[in-house]
Image 1: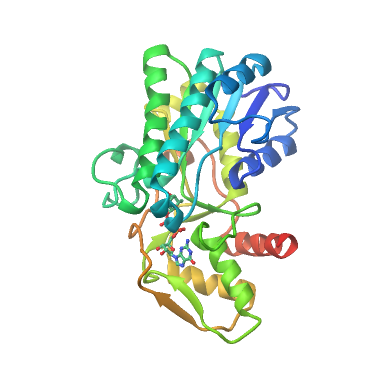
Image 2: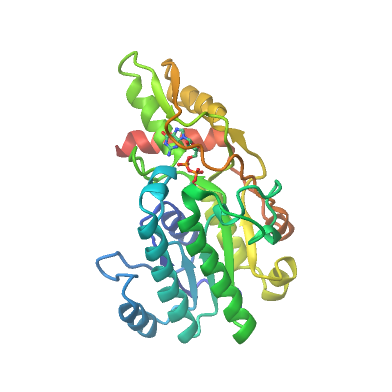
Length: 317
Ligand code: GFB
């Protein structure tokens, strides 16, 4: 059942993260009055009993599941057990409690790394489980695939309206700028910014040739609201399996991204590549036909998004 009233009760799990904070901004900006959030110390999503008690007491009608163990290529590669286990637990607890308490629609969020490493581009939803995964993030991907399949299975067996949205690489305010655990875009903003104080070259990972698609997180939040407000029949006509990609439809090489960030930050430092660090998947441009067929389009260009993110970084770090 779709989100239709400004008084609907919406639980945003993970509201302090990059995605969750953008979803809360979007919901409140659109006038939704009952947005429910809990910090990690108030509700541990790894604790099944606590999650179920919370759902029974608060009775959310809609859920955006943006809580997850996430990180860039190095974090994914270094902590495979944490990425697999924590994500499986969080999503099993939240999706399970949502089912038991009759949530009207849950939106489960994952990532386009669920698709096979060598799948044809752009990545269509139907390519799921057609080939081996990218090794640096297969642990995270397997957890997320399980979440997609859990939503699909509950819908198949019980007719619930549980849907999955798979965003491409995201960036924006509240991102993680830690150089060890972050994704490439915030890492490069920080590296170029800090390098401005001297003449040392900026060290980037891998070869610079992999291509990525970047979506500003407020665009994703807007897409989430759009899908939540789409009627059930329309939604499943576009996505019979309940799986929808979210992206902007364009990608660029990491070396090109580095040039754009260098311009945004105003750095003149040279760039060197550290070939001992992994490249990850060569390309993962998503096919956005399903989402676009629902009438949604992105509105923030990469240049504009980079400027906003750099401003946020300067103000907050
Ligand atoms: O964003 P990123 O960490 O993750 O890296 P993925 C993207 C590309 O940027 C890789 C290169 O080819 C990196 O080698 N890169 C260059 C850098 N310099 C840097 C740097 O300083 N820091 C980082 N982090 N990368 C993640 C997955 O994959 O993307 C997750 O591991 C998830 O599961 C997420 O799907 C969206 O795009 O390779």
